[in-house]
Image 1: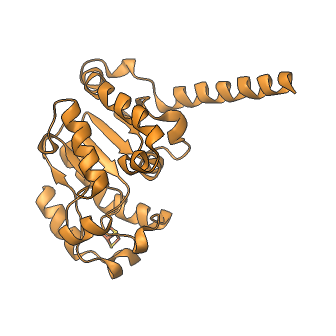
Image 2: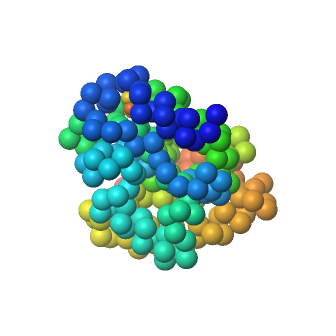
Length: 214
Ligand code: SF4
């Protein structure tokens, strides 16, 4: 089974309601041996028409971010948690994400075996680690069962809110280091549970601080 076989299955898929509104499926594209996979939310209008991921304004910005660190789109693999466009670009429903990722995305990951999965935005991050918060956890790599994840804001979010550009660009600049560490010293990256404990104690600290201030 290779990525083309999976893409052929996706093209025929009717496993969730999103198949009803699609023009065509968007399985993902890029280097089948990529060290890094970028995983976004779902296809928009342009992606649905072209059958390719990240080809609209957010995609153009993603290409610029890659160029900023000396990479091309063809160096990486780009996909989404759902392969069909949600109607009127609504958020994909949890059951749609569950069905699509279980049937296709996780199999694509198993074939590509990336050193790092870059989650773009909240939906992608929360499919892998449900209790993460993108505004708090972006730019902090972590491991789950040996797989390294690196959460970054969705490029579309940075287009809507210009203030996020500095964060997304700074997180992108750190990506080559994250990959090098994931390949050479993965154990130096924290397990998700260790980060959760840190977040919990930060929360306790801030509520203590709040109590002291009020
Ligand atoms: S979104 Fe995924 S699971 Fe749903 S119909 Fe499309 S390919 Fe199938």
